[in-house]
Image: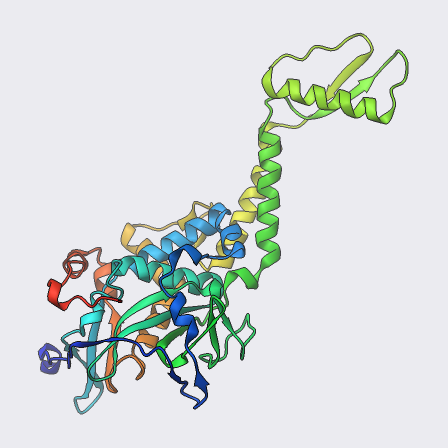
Length: 369
């Protein structure tokens, strides 16, 4: 096992500037790369209405934040492989410059969390290569919101391979300058739209029922001149307005109010909300107990076991997607790979992550401009 302790240096070359403004895609088709002018124009960036609607569901928001915290807290490390006579053995390598500062304008935990966000909601994510080193490999990146990227050769929501015709904010991008992450899990904005819509409608019903302390009921006219439909509607509206601001209702001898035999927990649809939270946990592939849903006799014994469950059932598929994409030959030289430091996360040791969060010397920072 002595090979594992041997550290080899990676070829780190000085940056040579921005990615080319025009070129030819890897399929030989010419591209004008006009969309590159929209990269970094942040006032145009949007995350998408479907994503924002799903995030308004508390269970979806909690699930997203839990998995994002895992992806964002783990540093990346570089290695190569060597045959030791029996198995392939990992040999640690010195990281390339971008590994500690993917986008020079933001910390790694930020871009990693939002890269996962795109994978989680849309099933894919995009990084634009803003500069390259002298050996031709990427030196810095900028994340492109997946909701703003259109691929003419794939309509989705299932993605089969990296796209060859990419448009960002209406302009074409050279596919050679885009790193495309394809999630093994379909994005939830297209996977179960009815479940998300049901959760939103249920929350709206709970909000309506919570707006008054007086149980719902029937307002009935018992005497006097009969009221027409409009007068009854106005009467009910005025009564509801009074209920919103007062605990005591006043009626004359011609009206009676019969409240429904509904308890507060039924008015707030507690059982329905609990069931829908379980459905959303299933949709997000997160153990229900981690999002506060009761699962009966199932329980965990320690925080380390809960971290292991979150990693195994929720975060691993996305982490492997990111690490595998960054290990491809359009990002790293052949035979070199990156992976997340999972052991540090599972053991609750973030000292290495804090060290890696420190910036390089100013002369080593790659500017996106």
